[in-house]
Length: 490
Image (cartoon, rainbow, N blue to C red; front, top):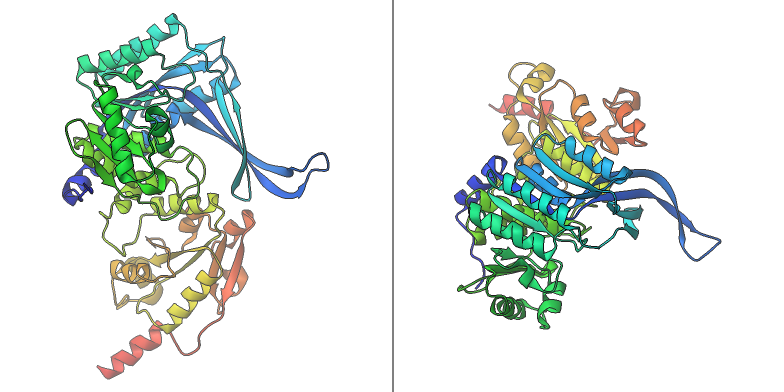
């Protein structure tokens, strides 16, 4: 059975409600470290690239990234895991403490290092990953502390996620204790598994292996939708106390099989894939949040599928916002301007993926050939073009009473419908300086009737190594001339 779209009103309400839920996450927390630089030559010592380091970013990973995905929706999260008594563990504690909606129970173990995944990235391409970790099981004392912390958190949680990366935290005893505690509290349990013996997760409501993991567990091929459904059925037959299986199949989409129901296949939403790092975390977090918000499992999977399509289009371990999720689901009406916050997030994602982002602005009161010429030219000179549109008040301040001829919503929607305008946002200020500062574009485009030193925001782009580019004018076209011409005819 192909998944039919749920009533859009229900999904819209669910997305709106994601900031009201609380989800508990237990599992293998880790620190994700990204070393960014450039590679222009090979080493004389070995046939490997030499990467000149530019910056290092550190962020919560593993189970901690699941929690960050929940926070990105505005949800509350409780994160429970084990860290080492080291600098990386302290960094994770600091990163978690900075999140006001996150309750962290990170238990220090002086006998094990904090798990760290270091990725070397050059020219927006991941070249290598270095893992520092241990996979030995935690001891009984730590296990008891984890289960006790989870019992306390379950009293206010709408779902429990077990995020298993095979680093020794989710032992069979810990899993059994957590699932039993969740059953007592009436809280659904979702598992992102690492073990082949899924019996360890007995009593879980949903197990979410990827295609490779599912094939290894069952010994069956998972190369199309029907094969995935058969493999899911084999799991439910072999492990009789698991409620449902969700096979995540990358660009092939997802297959959900609930015990006693027909399989449901969900087509992938991704339009482009840049980096799959952390996509599984996004899926499990979104499904759990959807269940906590009151969705059925099938509809929650649809949310997770849309979120995955967004996450894999971003560089590195990333999260998804409610605005992005709403847009990915098609809930947002087409050709609409976006908020400044969302525009800034999308620009940052494009830049992290190595795309050069351009910016231009104007009133665009009556769209004419001169506008089209300028916008198409600008888009040909960058990888993505953001257009700032003056609000009605700022147009009046610039052009006088009687203007604009069309309101800001109409002007912005017309621009957003053009293929060479990737993003449109309205700004209220007299100049676009605050918007440019928020967006941090790589290049600002302005008409050649300006001198470069007159262009607002030039200092902002110069500070990041960007530029100002003046667009050749298409003579004989202006809104003022068009308004005057229409006035004479009337």
